[in-house]
Image (cartoon, rainbow, N blue to C red):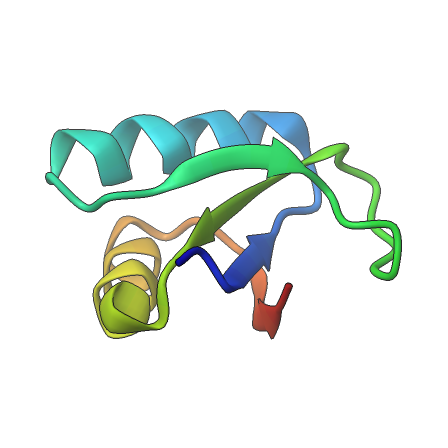
Length: 72
């Protein structure tokens, strides 16, 4: 069950993150930014708790700035 999300300051970062995470084989889903979180970007990357460390590690590795992970 998808229960975590990371947010981005721009759509450019969100697209870069999505492409790279998918290429790395990490299961994610692109979703609209949840209303309870304010951000300049209208999309977020959602995933399960089980891959949280992979998502965070990968985003740090490729240098994409993000906020989170946050609960959905």
